[in-house]
Length: 186
Image (cartoon, rainbow, N blue to C red; front, side, top):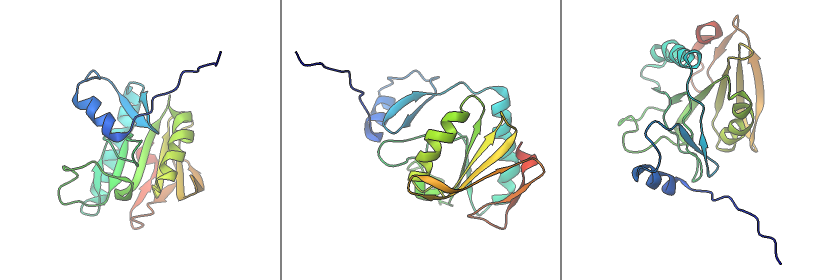
């Protein structure tokens, strides 16, 4: 007798979109497609939501005309992943991405606000974003009250990793003239 083990069914972006269009998932479900797996995401708490609002407030006016601010919407990474990061700065697009989801090459800065998802954001999402050459990835770490910055994606990870405190200031890689006080987002 040959042993048979259950196998995962991995899905791709096309099948993921068809499932959404068919109404397979309840409208209130918080789901992401990560490396072909459909993952349930934690509900957004008030502290998390407030920090996303702080990011929007701190960066929107500074990047006006140079980038598009996007929050908690999909970004397509290859054929197997469509995460919904907490915050994105995207390259300008005349139709504001109304005809397609942004792709990795459209991303200037990607930010996750992390409390209960910190380990996942540091490990799986960091590698996912580096693999797809997202040039700059920040984690607003609500557990340790710091900003983790990941830059220079290469070979599935980031070569530069920095942790900043509230007293620090950071410039964006894609828009170096823009400086952000970490206290404004923490």
